Structure formats: C-alpha cells, structure tokens
Image (cartoon, rainbow, N blue to C red):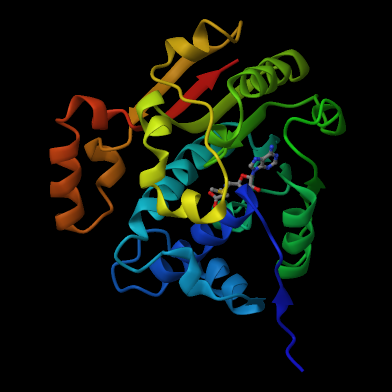
Length: 272
Ligand SMILES: C[S@@+](CC[C@H](N)C(=O)[O-])C[C@H]1O[C@@H](n2cnc3c(N)ncnc32)[C@H](O)[C@@H]1O
C-alpha cells in the first residue's frame, strides 16, 4: 500500500502544484537558484502525475527566481523585526517558513484554501511558531484570527492575480486597518498580463481565471490609504535574474527593453 498523499484539487489550488514542482526540479539542478529541498520531499510525499504541471528544469527559474527574491525581502523584514508576525497568504505548499528560518520570536501564519491547508498539514511536519489557517483570503473573518500586536509582514506570492480587484484592495485595506504597522509584499501581473493569460500554461491547465491586473504602484497607493511605496521591481530587472544562468539573464535583459513586457509581472513592497 502506498503511503503517499492523494490530491484532488481544482482551479487555482492546482497552480501551487506547479510552483512546488518547479522548486523541486530546481533543487535537483546543478545550477539551483532556490535550493528548496523541502519541495523535493513534498513532491515525493504526494501521489500526483507531476508531468501534468508543465514544469521542467528549463522553465523552473520562472518560479524560483520569484521565490528567491521574496525570500530576500522576507529575510530583511525578519532581520529588522525578530518578533514579527508573518501572514503568508495563498501559501500553497511553499516552504518559505523553513527556507528563511524565522527566529523563536516570530509567529508565522500560512494561509490557503481548506483543501490546500489540509494537504499542507499532511506533507509538512508541525513546527513551533508555524500556524496553518484554512480559509480563503477573502474571508472577512480571516485577519481577526491573527495577533495584531507586532510588526507584521503580509506576503502574497502568486496570489493577487487570482483575486478580483475589489477583493484584493479590500484585503490590503483590511491589513492596514488591522495591524499596527509593517509591510505588504506581493507580486502582480499587469493588465496586459491578465489579458494574455491564455499564454500561461500553468493557469490554463488549472482551469483558473486570472482577474486583477496592477500596472504600477499608484494603482495601490491611490486605493489603499496609509501605504507607502518601498520598492517596485519589474520582473525582468537585472537584480531579479542575477542568480540565473547567463542565457536567462540575456533573455531577461532583452524582454526588459520591450515596453509591454517589461512590467508584465512586478514585485511590490509597501510599508504601512
Ligand atoms: C500560483 S499558487 C502560489 C502558491 C505559493 N504562494 C507559491 O508561490 O508556491 C496560488 C495559490 O494561491 C491560492 N489562492 C488563490 N486564491 C485564493 C484565495 N482566495 N484564498 C486563499 N488562497 C488562494 C491557491 O490555492 C494557490 O495555493
């Protein structure tokens, strides 16, 4: 009898199998960017036809460069705030908690739909300071379950595009209202990226539909009071691709010169 965990996911949750698989493939490559050995173990624990994710060693950096970049921002926040609360929205099976090694003063909340949270509990061991909340990030009661007495990092990687604009802005507005201060870090697709989502094999195969496009920081600053821009990084910038092999760096430099493509995906970081 197999001890592997079965998965039965539909829509947006399916996409986190692709990001997980990308991280596992990357970890086994000689040129690994993220070194996510937790992803390798998670993939081994799950009974799934991983070829269905469309991820390969070759395209895995499209995921792992982003994750590595957000790991860097997370580490910076944790270094400045060793007693932080981390709110990891749409976490999927991401192992950022273990990769970034938060200190004992940190309370970390991994949040995703109930079916993903359930899988997470089966795949990863419990750890002190690590909490899993099974909920949609649009659940109006979600933030009230999280302590509001410390500097708070709200992190959403690969999530905002699955939300409607109204839900996304309500979520970020709710974060600013609830927590005393901290940062919101997330990635977004531009409206052009949303309009061309048919070109995204991972999304297409999942059956999910992308909705919210963000073109520039002003889209957030104008709609979420009491936020201040810290960093805005279009994805093909040199600093994102620095850990990638040369052929990816050359491709990124070319794409960075094409106006519509330059901002097709961006990383955002705000203080509140
Ligand atoms: C592309 S995956 C990214 C997963 C993870 N952050 C990573 O980078 O590997 C998108 C994740 O967002 C989650 N998600 C999408 N909409 C959500 C919602 N309304 N509430 C909670 N999670 C959501 C999905 O279930 C999925 O785990």
